Length: 307
Ligand code: CP
Image (tube, rainbow, N blue to C red):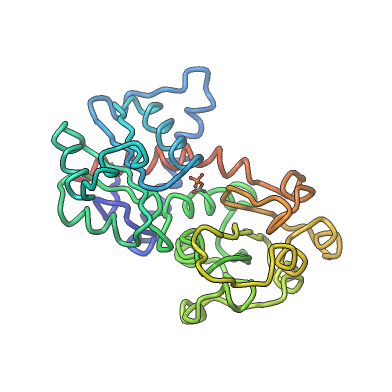
């Protein structure tokens, strides 16, 4: 059996292009499985997985849980908002207590960048990063590239524009690493205040005009404005952001080609993306969500094979 080069999935930065291709080929098989009448396989029977979420989530948490159940793993769910973290318990004590219940894998979301890396140095289980602050969200990037491959046949050679709040986005960084490893060209576009100063050193094109970005790309991945991470004002108002950077039908109709629209969710409708695009034939947003289950099944199955 082919194996991943890593015991943990902490970020796309730590994966090889071969790892990503192996995850995609494995996800192809699992996508077939979850479209059958009997959607469950015994691949992770007797493996126990803890989903440990210190930040809110809908898609990622449900998608991991469903992936684990489809693989016949035993699943426990931890949410910090109703836990003893509220009484002052530390991250490492929390996870060590969970692990003492004989847990094999930990899927963790945390608001601090590097939290899953810290865990991986202190505990023995396989760790999967389900989003660490503004750093990485590797399974989101994998499902995004998998969805581009499914829609356009390949990722190599495609032009992908990542539009919006790149500064606060873990999705952006993981997508840049993943798309580049797979041979795509990447552009970031947004107001200067929402693009990190270091961004061009990652080998991406930088554009401030959303019309030019849309004209350039084959795929636009529109990012959420992350108001909860913004301690200062990065633009005058949501209305003004929407006016200058919101992607709507009128903008798409002005292009001389069809492009694919993606969004990691949750969407601020009418801010970064208008409903007349989000719910249109251009959008593959719900395909991304569907593919998330197959990608997460592949990641968990492959990591379980690496001790
Ligand atoms: N895309 C994403 O991470 O969504 P959730 O925050 O709902 O998990």
